[in-house]
Structure formats: structure tokens, C-alpha cells
Length: 143
Image (cartoon, rainbow, N blue to C red; front, side, top):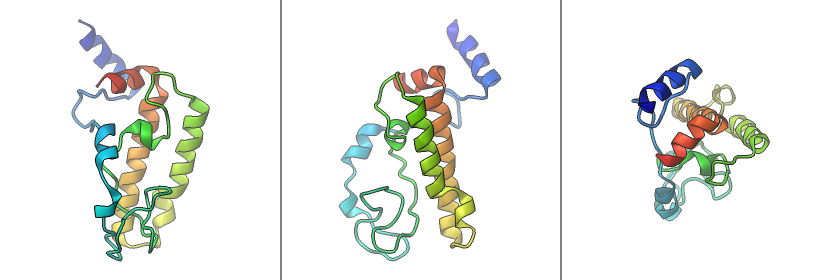
């Protein structure tokens, strides 16, 4: 009964629910299980892959790394996995991440980094939109 109404609201608001094709769910438990010691940088081949600080750039050559498909939106946006979210903190984190990975900042870099930048930026945008709206945040939490 409510499923159809929720889908209509999603379409009106321009949102996608977890059950709608195109929405990729990310698991927070998988992110914590994944060890960074087995990762290698695509550019320099150095050990460790993404640095421990931001997780977006290689520790050695600072090349942008591919997005981690196991990372959930809450950990990406540095929020507690809860329905209550500090929207000011969420907005600040969104802006911080976009300053790191937005495609405009990679126009003079390799095509690989340009592609990774577009993927990161899309994920950051999706995470921000999902966690900002209470309905989509709640649906993401229960999925």
C-alpha cells in the first residue's frame, strides 16, 4: 500500500529508493573488514593504496584512487549511522569532499584520474542528497 505512494514521492522529489534500479547500496561492515595493506596504487604501484587520512589519494604519489564500492554513505560523509544527522556538518563535509574530488580540479590530470574524479563526485553527490532528506535517509538506514 505505502510502497506505491513512496515511489511517487521519490519521483516528485527526484530521489531514488534503495529498491529502485540505479541505486547502489554500500555496506559499512565490508568497509571495516577491508584491509588497506593489500591495496596497491594504480599509478605508482606503491603499497597501501589510498592514504589513511582522506582515503582518496595514494600515500606515495598522491594520485586519485578509484572509489571504494564497499564504503557506505554515513562513513563517507563522516556521520553517525543514525536517523538524526547534523545537516550543517553534512553540508560542510559535502563541500570539503567536493573540493577534493570535483572533476574541475582534475582537468589537467590523466584520463584515469578524471574518470575516478567523476565517479567520486557522483558518489559524494548521491550520499549528500540521500542523507540530507529525512525520507531517503530513513530508507537508506533500513535497507
